[in-house]
Each structure stands twice: as structure tokens, then as C-alpha cells.
Length: 375
Image (cartoon, rainbow, N blue to C red; front, side, top):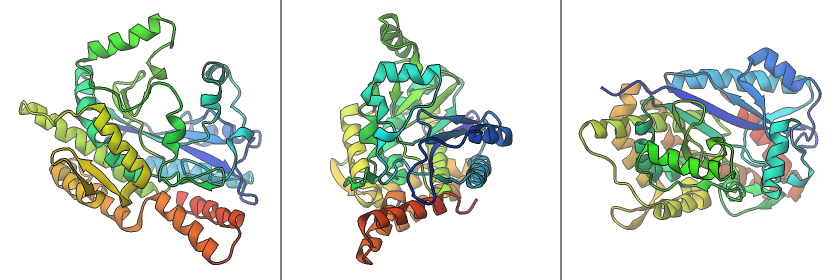
């Protein structure tokens, strides 16, 4: 019997001025207090003042995650609207320069700036983190080693950052290019056991490089604060349905891997070097490109890779009650991820004769509308 796999999801959003479409570099006083009063401690400031973060309670199903995030997105969007702002779920803003943004006040943020300097000052990016509850720390490491292979698959579905400072960056997730400027990021290497993981962390903590494992920003990591395995590779999804699809895939994949373990089997563990190449391919092309099938040694269309993934985890998704959410990944293929749709909106506006800035304004309007669609 596979243990219950609880879920928790964090999302980061940008606050924008609905008239200028720039980010709100300094939201009105009282905004975060109003959000806290309406939502409670599940809403927090982020590194920059133009950002806000939410976190669900511990959930048992993807449907429960959906309900909680829908309520929080809706409530924050309402409060933002009352204060002359709009909520936008995208991993980068199409044109606002990061250099104009101010960090949130507080000792924690001041220390991050002091330690990271220019690497963190560029962090006008937003992501989605999904936690899966695994009480046994050895299971966290074992699942991490195997599920690393699938991180590019999930990244591709979430890509939402094709633009940066008024430029089309030629990739579906430019967010990762920014984030990779930080230390201790990317695909972690294979780790033998939880005790080995602790030894790795202790080595740099004792050397004074970091305070604790919260400063390990891998694409997937054991959480420092909770008995969970935290997936961090994904862009924040503009459409809530897409976020729930990836959450469901992560939960079903974890269950599938644990079922293999019960039969003394495992998914093949690949070197971080190879997985990182697929990560780049997902970052560059998203669902419109290819990934390497390391079993066959060939690059395969993402749509084919996805069908194999759905088939492999369908039994587990059905057992978890999230098969419909998993199969919604095909809809993302059909209409494209947020990055695909942003690019389409921009190109249509330019074709219609709009100047560059007005075309980017149309992208922001599109993102604001999709952030609260269907909630």
C-alpha cells in the first residue's frame, strides 16, 4: 500500500498597474495587510515589493489544491483591483526593467541582497513550487533521484516567460536563465541516501557558506521546513488549470515510483548532465519542441513523450482521483503553454499595426485576464 501523498503548492505573482501595464514597484500601503486579513498567513510578501506569494494548506487531492488557489487568486485580485492594481500570473513581466524594482523591507531580504548582490537583484521572476508529503526521508531522496528525469517534462507544460525587458528572448522560459545566475540551482546530482544529503549540506553550513538548506535552490529538493519533496523547476502557470495539471502529474509520478519500489524496481537514474540537456530543450521550446528519449537515444516530439508519460502514470492518477487533471496536459499541447499564447498575442498585435509597446500592453492585458479565468 502506497502511503497517502499530501500536496502543497506555492505560487508567486506580479502586481501591475492596469493603466501603464508596468509592475507596481511600490504597492499601496495596506495592500498586504488587507490580503492577510482576507486570507491569513498563507499569503506573504516576496523578495521584491512588486510580488506576492501564496501557499495552500496541506491538501490531499489536486482538486483541493485547485479550490484553495482559486479562492486565493480571486481574493487577491479583488483587493488589488480595489487599490488600483491587477494581479498577473507569469514568470516574467514583458517589459518592466528589473533595475527599477525595490526589495521588500525586512532583515531577511536585506541579508539576501547582502549575500547575493546583483544575482538576486535581478529576481523579478515568479515560479510555482509543488510539495509532495513523504514522511520517510529516505523516500524523499529516492524519489528525488528518479523523478529528476521528469522535471523537463513538467517545466515544458508551465512555461510562461518568453519576454524580458521588452525583448522576445527566443525561449519559452527565460525565468530559468535568470534564476540560474544564483548559486546552488539546477538539476541536483544523484544522492545515495538522506544521510549523504545531510553530509553535503553540513559541509557548506559548517564552512559558513550558508545558514541552512533553505539556501539550496535546486529544481527539486527535500524541504527544510516540512517532510516533503519540493519541486521548484516550474514557471508559474497563468491558467490555473495548467497548474493543477502539473500538480496532478507530480503526485501521480511519485505514486508510480513508490509502487516500483514496492516491487524492488526503480526508474532508471540518469546523470544530471543528461537531464540538464532536456531541461534546456524544455526551456527553449516548451511543448512545441522535442526532448531526448535516453532509452532510445533519439530526440522525440514532446507530444509523443507526453503520451508515454500519461500512459505510464494513468493507473496511479486514477487511484488518486486526478486522471482528468493529468489528461488535461493534452489541452496544453493543443493550445500551447502561457509562453506560446503570450507570443501569439504579441505577434497578432504587431501584425495588426500596433507599435511594440502597445503590443506588449496587449500581452499584459491577456495575462491579467487569464490569471483569474475559470476561478
